[in-house]
Length: 323
Ligand SMILES: Cc1cc2nc3c(=O)[nH]c(=O)nc-3n(C[C@H](O)[C@H](O)[C@H](O)COP(=O)(O)O)c2cc1C
Image (tube, rainbow, N blue to C red; front, top):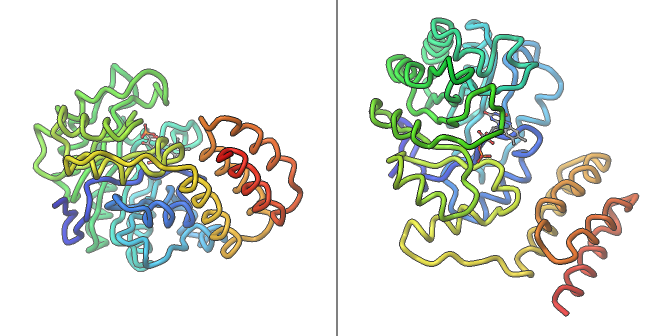
């Protein structure tokens, strides 16, 4: 059983933090489907936490059903990061995750995210200060390094372990690569070889079979899944079946329809109408990709002016698919 300090993860499969994606409705839906050991919120700026930015009120909401839950923070100032970690603990998170992998320019310019991989003394200080300020599990998520000439994941991994992190997650692309090329899983193997704390592999898991392959090839203790969760939210349940040696079940049309309707129901109950329209267009896009005539539904939903006609459009679409 994978454990982060005292936190037992019922499954070694982890939802990767994704800005604008891993919100409370999406996390809850995935959790209810089963197979997930830990869900993660999108990253939150330590500066926003310091000034108690008003967006925190929305972003930090979660339901007890999602537990265990990890909240990710980022920043470059050790004082602010320590304060943010304490805030996360006070907010009831089971795990505080430090982002040292974000490759976005805006974040790199602030010397945060993956930029810390090029300033390991600062990275160490941040981890040390965060460790000292919380008693919940502390994890660090990072990439391979800034670019191919500045690979620092092995050193950073050792620093995390020395400073008392409970686990690390590696997305083995460089910051320069962003999302191009492939994630080099052999780097996960290398990291696993030198650390005794759990190593979570991440990157390019597209199908449930990839989970088994990543664990087999790299020896990693858990697998974190990002983009594939949107296209196939059943991937955790399917991969869990495979890990138990059972055949994974494919979602039926009814499963897809029910997922869309349930997502809609949660959104309506929890979000303001303006955001409901925006979000339902987005998630219907994810869940209907690859379905014959899925585009028709996306177009129809794109032209809806209010959420009221959403259920009709979805029912019509799936009835026509079934016929
Ligand atoms: C839309 C989007 C938003 C992301 N936001 C975050 C984030 O807030 N924090 C983070 O550590 N990684 C973030 N990531 C990176 C993912 O957590 C993950 O490391 C990456 O997508 C590789 O995994 P995958 O191939 O399974 O998608 C984001 C990725 C995407 C696609």
